[in-house]
Length: 583
Image (cartoon, rainbow, N blue to C red; front, side):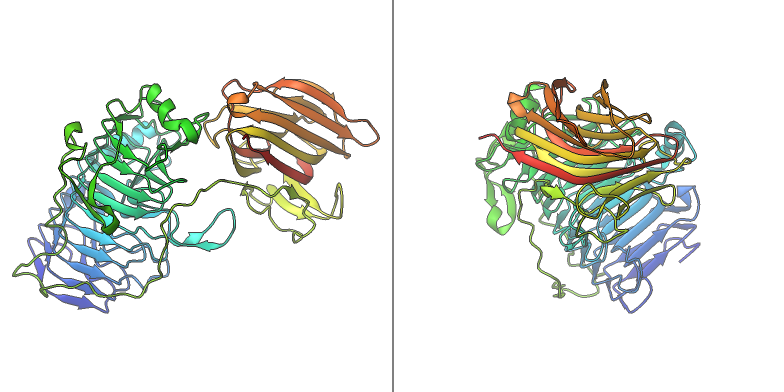
């Protein structure tokens, strides 16, 4: 439909089509009621505007529809049960959506829309970096952040998500560390992406997700309150202060957050968190016999994170206590009369009318769920600790291959990171890093090795050969992005080796040198580390008590970079990561 006013599609069985129902430009007040929609190539229902003026597509309703097993004709499979784009005052209510290649309900750019009383589950069967209910704004990358927000805020405000029952977020993708396909993978329950702002997320029940029941990427002034988020495999709520977006003014209050066990966080906080970004309070949290875990705050150790978090003034009025669900084992998350939630101001969530309901407009009633063949997915938590092999000598790596088990940033031919047989400290192969002028970012090329360690002795080492250019950088961080800097070694264009800015000695060009670091982490950290440098034909030279940043006491990653502007060529070999945990 385009140019339509007050049209209704009701009680229809729609299948074997491109899209079940398409509502396009210059449409207002149309309804899709009580339809059964399946076996489409694309979305179950698409509501698509073609203008920056959201009033051209407005006041539509998709209610009481059963949408399942859709989206199998699209090559990209970015299809949802209902997808909206550039629209105003659209209501998605009482729908039952399951078995979709991507989200159940999605929206890119919309204002004053409502997602309510929907039952959605088992989605993202062939995609990842998604959720069950997802939204995003549209960015104009040529504008400043303030200009973008001034343009988009009138069209991205006032949306609500409430009284939805959602579970099994799914996700299918390639594990960035192992390179293997994995499911469930990299999904959330409700995901507000790309600077969504001014949303109200309340009275939803969400369980069995991967990265959390809720995720906010940037944005401001979203309220997340009175929800139940349970059994997120990695975390329950994920706040990500997207770089450069000035995330601020969000509130996270009166939620019930239940971690399924060791290895799952209550909160995951992205890099660059500051107090003004999110206000936390009056939340009821529970992790069974374990202490509630929080990750992503530099220097905050998981084992005592909750106490340190609250001691810092966060989560005032929040409690650690069993929420006392009626029957959590059978997914009945109603609260017993004795639950501490009521005295904390957390209201009961009535989901008795969620999903499809009897109506003259219903295509079929009763509407039993259709069984769809799908892989059984395990959402049970695993203690995810980033590790690295003790030794990388590159002898078994394919020539020309990339570094494995790491995040690599390179843009051939201007920058490369690849295995070579041009040089080797031992054996026949090493890893070569090259750079040419013209790169957009000064930190490219780079390699990031994720490596979690909260205490004990950290020992790192590598054989390094600097043939041309510089600086070469090897550094330890307690967060990949917003970090306190641990041990850092740099070699400039003249071969001078420095440790956290302190010049030590000059390395010979075109020759191998061995660099070994030893650093104590955790409560026993001294704020210093030791370095041993060995060059060909010389006795090892020791440099003790080298100072790193005062706030560094835990390790999240090791980063290698070439940060110069001219031609550069380095080789690394026999890269070692040794961990000795504290008792």
